[in-house]
Length: 225
Image (cartoon, rainbow, N blue to C red; front, top):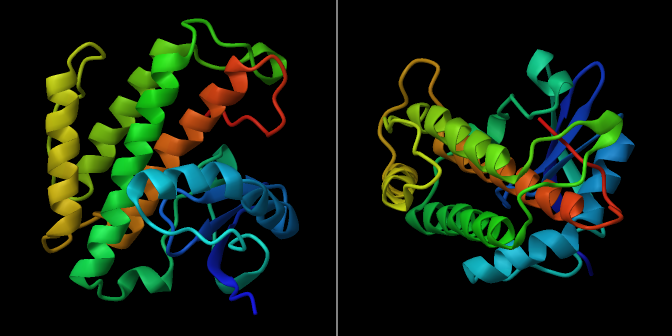
């Protein structure tokens, strides 16, 4: 018997995000709830490679059935194209084992992104209406966002330069430490469960976009946020 995957829906006026509670980075959007859940299910094969990289078993049936445990009201960030609202489950305590599992999936997301970037051409195929960043600008965007996200969990680093792997690794190492050993959340800070999901989502969203825009024909939707 298939156990439904717990998800929560962030419902905006123009977009809905479906996020798997226990799988940081497995989060997709659609124009409504049904479309968001369909998109989430369609990304099972792509997310499976992230879980494999993390050494975490990911059921092949994970997208067969979903249990919507909560709906939260989205806002301008949601409609712009990014998940921006935590859910009630994020308030729950995380055991050391759960923190390690979630953090391993964040680390795997970075690895997948770096591998995709290493194999991508400098100029990427243009997205809808001729938009979308090329490879290096996309990498820079991800690193810049990560420096901002890191501050939400008490980690302060300057945005690493594209050609400075030591600085990138240093920032990521401190993010990992903060996720594994979280400190009291500051005002407007992020709880660790939500932080892991948001960080991994952004990294994977752009890794998958880069993959799609490297190929002559993209089968999945492109998000150029």
